[in-house]
Length: 140
Length: 140
DNA sequence: TGTAAAATTGTAATGATTACAAAATTGAAG
DNA sequence: CTTCAATTTTGTAATCATTACAATTTTACA
Image (cartoon, rainbow over all chains, first blue to last red; front, side):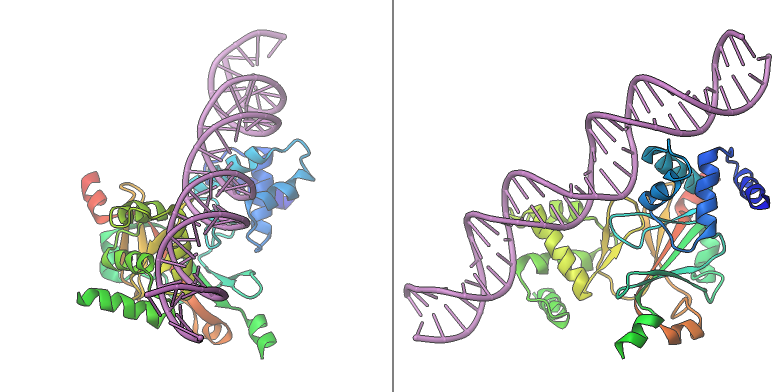
């Protein structure tokens, strides 16, 4: 399967040894925009890896995050969600349906040039809270 | 004290009845840019209100957030920090010194016009992670 | 095949936050 | 000034996502 090789390559690109769990977690996160939390990832992968433990999922997510292969989304309190799509985008949370959507960003950076030159930016998280298109239509 | 009246007015503006705890919490959050967590707010206010309980601080912070008078900052995992400054700004977290700084934003919105017209934006959180000016200098 | 390093697992602990019910305070009506 | 219901505050116990830790399994290479 060609997809598998892509995932392995991506892991290697981020200096992560491609074990089964790491491959499956990254594969899942790259295949969806649903931004699952650790529990959801665990439940999903348990079907494919019956010996899987929650701790392994947490360990793997922490490793992938530290190496930069995925991103933590902390828009909901009490839980961390994960994002495997690497291109820059904003996260929109609808307060009506509680869904999380990806949205395009207008600028390459939100910061002003003067600040950009002073600090070193390593990561960026843009969270928007509001009402989504669908729910706005329903409300009319 | 004129400042007290300002705090009371602000509470009323957000439709919050001005009790002692609410006044003190908002006063504290409006006076600092240190973005304290609930525990820090509790410890600080305990000096002024010896009967204060942690639960009251949590209740108050939840109320102020719901009414829109303050904002939750979820840039650190495992804890929520709070921000009483209402003008739009980004939060910059330095991975070296772990401090949290406020930074100016370049644009009025990070979203593209087409998306802005489709959804209703109620709140925005912009988190930048990196290395701050001070730590960059130290590292040289 | 043997062996050390790395990966995975299961259980117990952590710690911020919340649920809940009791106690205290407030504010308006008599 | 009282009364009493509504609101606010408090303390304790529970919740629940995440982590610590030590044991077990797997991997990779001599």
